[in-house]
Image (cartoon, rainbow, N blue to C red; front, side, top):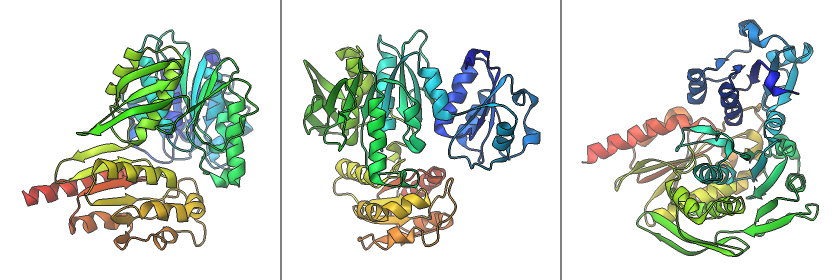
Length: 462
């Protein structure tokens, strides 16, 4: 299809982070853009300010006429939207061109050199780092990302004339199989989305399929030790790690005074004194992967050093909201056991000897059911746990699946099972040191109220 001839684009599920980048892209292109989402959020408010027409009821009568002409309107949807959604049902029955978000992203980027970052975790930070490096370098890049970059207050980067596009490659519903990568990185393949894939083996095989799609003239950069059969990919395969060896890795890692720096080592190259703008341990590994792809695409050592030092991170990726001797508040999007473990370990490394309280909101009933033991083991690394109700997102409840199945397996004595409505009063009555909020649901709405509670307590103590 010819996207240039499309006059209007309507998004069903417009508030998703991946959908919002496409909305911004078509607004930039001068199209009439609108859509539906179930919930108004800070992100949807921003999209409306930027020119999108959005509404929050499944009501076809409310949709403007510009989006009801199948000859000129394109409809885009996310697989998270129920199949019986009224507006989507109408569009399907009336001859509209309808694309999944991933299909559209594949169409937009197929004529550029796609640099795709996939993985169970680490892909948002790694792709964001890569986009920032190339955007700040002589190479240039466009980017469609899964997080709002603080440097740009956006998840879409556009560089006039750039022939490279950084893409966060989403494995949900096998979406990343619609992409045509020139180069790609795979950060992790810990099982997830088993409601879609069924088994860990099928999940892993989807990454092997993704790897086979990478252009043989490009390259594949894979985390050292991942259990992947990459024999179907005929091109160059590189490995990377933080400090476990591989073609790309870090040496001379220096941690102290709230800073982390290292030397980046790769085939025939060494970039000394790389400083992390977001100094947490997991970003050493993420940084090595991002630098590897940037270096393979021509970014210079000086450009890489400057960009890595100035990278401010993506929102809700180890995001500091309060940082003092009396109280610390960090918010993180971690919603898989491996991510939760890495986040807690990063806090431990930053604040040795201090008491760490985690507030965790499980995301999805299926993920809670499938990984309850893994969540419990990771959360047991805390000094204190506050566990909230499951955030259902797109799912209906599953009998017997609640936060309790995680809670009962957590081994630390200081653990509390609360409803969201109980959290602030509970915190106001107790003392806290380092607080870490975790989860992919609506826990982010509690961050500012939690911050205010902590600030009030520090003012009372002074």
